[in-house]
Length: 115
Image (cartoon, rainbow, N blue to C red):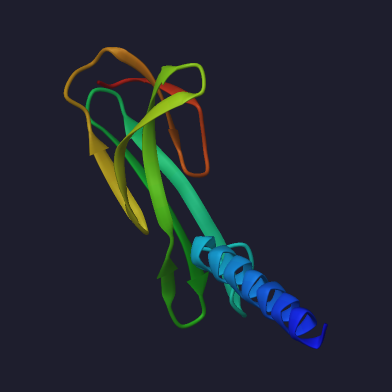
């Protein structure tokens, strides 16, 4: 009986550690909570037929901490294609002037003459 209880406890502990490890591996860098003395800064600018520029970072008293940012083009309902991504800031250069809908990591959707 004792052997079975110990075996059951080992399985329970191993399962708990496995789940905890899986959760930790999927967790990205902490972006929800700002470091002390920092402010969240994000936005985008665009020029029809030329570019879309997006930025996202923590602005701290002594440093700038870049965060992951993407620019995505609308393809169909709930389907977007990533056209540019980077850390801190990223620019997508248009290849034409047909109307498209885009979104960034923080803002969107917005329409612009940019293909």
